Image 1 (cartoon, helix red, strand yellow):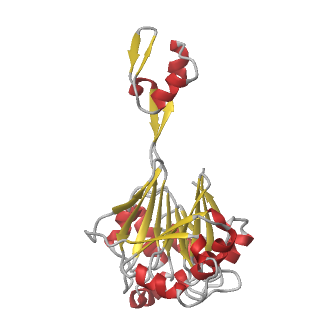
Image 2 (spheres, rainbow, N blue to C red):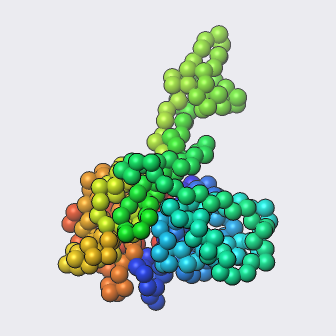
Image 3 (cartoon, helix red, strand yellow):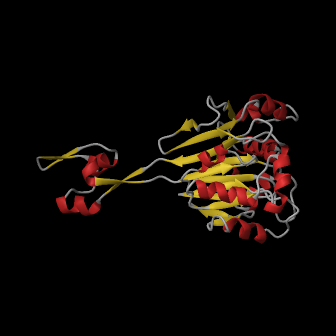
Length: 305
């Protein structure tokens, strides 16, 4: 099961309706937090998300509205659990800045946590780089342009092999170890005959989620979003304010929609809205002129992927 919860969809300043940036991805019970703005752990409470499920934190960049909630979240987890490993990934300077953040206050129980900090510095700035892989999924990053070291992230579920029950039933292959071998991609022997996994199984493509946080409109955003099932993208301004987007290295809703269109994505969920827009329906309409499957995200929005 893959479920994504939007915990904060405002730009730099929180509003009554929107907190600053954070997203929680639940993959079969494992929690991956993308950015951790001020108030994230309270948003998790409201969304009924167990904070102790967080096993990885992906930091897009070190502006305060994307990281200021990490201090409190880690303190809470350290009080609640012992021996837990949390892996924190981020761009260049992440180790130094995280250490400065932790040293800004006293932690009585920080030693109860195993914190692993990894800086991702892509060897080729114009290519996706895989920085983590598990048996069921992998994580990729690519450089973006926001004036400071900034990364976009891509979650990729691995393809799943499924048994063709119509074929195995016809052959009389019973449930049990033989089907397990086929699902693992191995060949089997049954009633004196050999069968390859490819003959009796099929592949279900894994799901892909792209996270495009603060950035100017650059070609790497399209690489990041390519063929994604869901693209979570900043869309800070209406097109009439695109000059401000250019000035602050952000994107307009039309630019976000153009990325989804060019990348052949299935769905675009926009976020990081400027507080000047109390009603974001106009932003959604503007994006749909280019990419019909565009949606304005909102705090506590849940997306099953």
